Length: 354
Image (cartoon, rainbow, N blue to C red; front, side, top):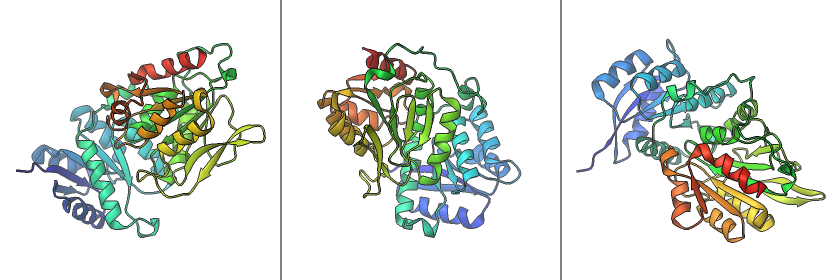
């Protein structure tokens, strides 16, 4: 008999509770065991219903979604998927929720975003499935390392002579759990690092907030790529959520390029697209890194990158929130060296300097 994933839906809107419950309940392996309008009701339902996964509205009345999430992850850790509106303030709040231990997030369904309700339901259910099997990281694990937004984290690895002049370029891909993994990776990177290009699967209204947050917490400069920027040492380029990020030759070195071509592996931006552009133009001067995430985007691209002579790294299973993308890459021989998250930055910098 199929053991269904028991889901609790928490949202202050009765209409949204009904819609999310209907979409989740339509999946054969899902069962919505309850729907709560606020944190107080949700807390009692968690005690009585013992759900496997909870979807949580970012902006809640009485007790905000962040406050509730922080208490939950401290007292009764469980997989949580945040459901967020597409506003700038909601984007910032969603990123803080991921820092507090939420597994993933999804935007609220809306008719004008060009995505069918069927496609939205498929994405929602997929994220809930991944959350159920994800590795939980409690709010307490972040409180000791979280810094004020105005205080960039110094890299624990000192700058090295010739680091920026190495001619190397670092390419990084991530998905579920990647917002925190990328943050930790960049906090181990010195300010005079080689250029770094990153694809994180994320809707377009969230990538600008993500880049700003990383910029405030990292020694290198972090920006959301706009296209045609000169690729320079000491700078990290985040793919915007609406386009693939590539690298191309400019008049004096490499520049960023954005492409609104169809999704690859159901993603735009796609890690494979970034890695393939690195293979075509950078080859053995590239360093490829694949971090936590569900699915297989980036695995084949990393393999082609390694075959071109590049050095390649994958996050190990024990430190991944979801060991999907790194696992696929490792199984096909794309990963030259598998490392825990807290050691990847050091190994990458050592490789660049070798």
